[in-house]
Length: 263
Image (cartoon, rainbow, N blue to C red):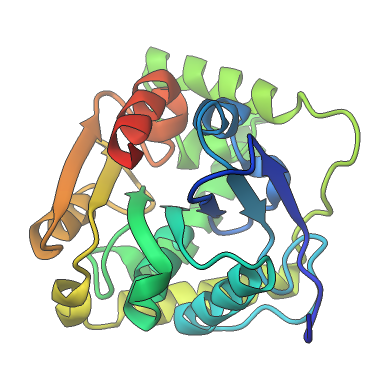
């Protein structure tokens, strides 16, 4: 294909409509929870990729969600797929909405997790929340995801430890860490999205499953309720005692919900 190369991984039998995974701020391929990927791949063709300028993908990360969506569409077309399902987590949830608006015929069903609409409450603050979480982690000697993705309850912190252990299971062919320039571009895109207008959500007629934890500090949970309210064909799943990474904490429940929804 023309343009920069995309790094990607495929799991599951290559048949039917594939599920394309769209990832969060700072994430590369190795940040996808194996429990989510393998769970979906039990009955679906799953494709995870690094968007432009992220991880091992070439090019420069754009500073808008809409440009990220354009790159994702180019990637999907390059693989030859005429229709896909989308699972967008956090920033990936913004990109999923933008893809559905730009190329509605390309999308069959959408799962949006830990995310929110354009102009959503607290979305523009995600960069400062990230900085605070990194600072807290440095003081505590922990990974930032302990503070950003999970509640500070006993259950939340136990889930953080288990999640981070799963992310470290892959011993070979690990992805390249995201660059500071790419993170800066992503933060620029997120801030602009947080200042945007959600009015066009009513145009997304696709079936959408909206999922989140009940105490998300990065994309405040109220945004998931707002997505479900504004999207014409949405269902909502709020996971208990869970934060931004609620789908990772409650991976078994989420995978069952996702498989039922995609079916």
